[in-house]
Length: 345
Image (cartoon, rainbow, N blue to C red; front, side, top):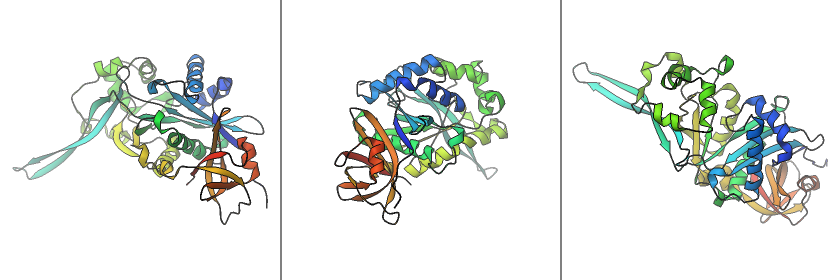
């Protein structure tokens, strides 16, 4: 039987990864992962302190995971967890989608109107985001994107006390050339006088203008052009795979959209997430792992050297997890060590 030696390790990011993660962030221009060098440097400092458990304020806590090829040390992707999104200092703003019914007895006609209304939360959920896979690794059998997505749920399950009871994910919508967005051009630009880029950049530092300038009155969607109506809550082509993974984990569209680009928010109770329910901590054992008896897992080890995880075929028997010796080598673990495991779909 051929031994299994994982080609990639997903581990916590460090300050030494700055240049490589910056390159990844700029490749996709992610919502959460900074694309400016100074901002990313500060984020990586927060990341190291967060993994070490030295940040008590959840709104400051940030966990960045990166997938590293073991042979070349190149980064194939990244993902992240934001401890808390929505505080009195920086509320979580969104447009809630709702409907109202109107009926005329005279005309014997009923209409159902969809409308949007600005809402905010000052006690927001934990957020997952920043999922990036470099172009050359997309569609490969290693399924780096799935590993990076699922490892966040494993970490949430391992450290429940560090996170909120709910989890949220903001998905990128479809953008046109030059980062144009149909909803922003027809609404956000008109109420703020800013371009999408200007508003997006400003909101990372100060969100006061959102509450001050966005109308409180409902926006009835029939007033918008048809193409803009179709874009509300629509997922961009590059985000569809990520949405499928979220849905497999148990997250659902909340009927909330981003007030800038109309991208959808997905969410769930952490306790109801499928990988959180399936999470187990088991003693490592080396043994023969045949395809007929095994299942694919994300298997992780966390100790004084930090957090790392791999995809592996494994057999779970009561209190132990049986893996190939190459899996333990990749995790820098030994037989008898406690490993965290979540099945991959």
